[in-house]
Length: 62
Image 1 (spheres, helix red, strand yellow):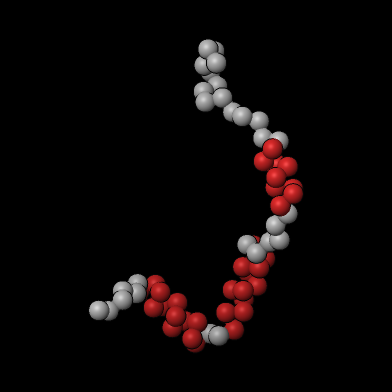
Image 2: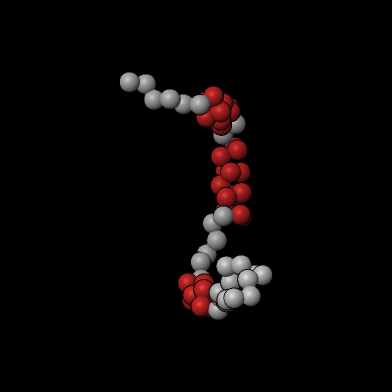
């Protein structure tokens, strides 16, 4: 049974094989935008300080 691989995935595999320096650029970009240290205490404070929002702003009965 063959495993399906999209044309885009095939293209990216071939392109990265021809341009191996781009793999390091991808890692740098991921580190810049996504891989951030998490502060659990600060996140807990933010979660506790949230104010509940009414389901419908213009409903005068709530």
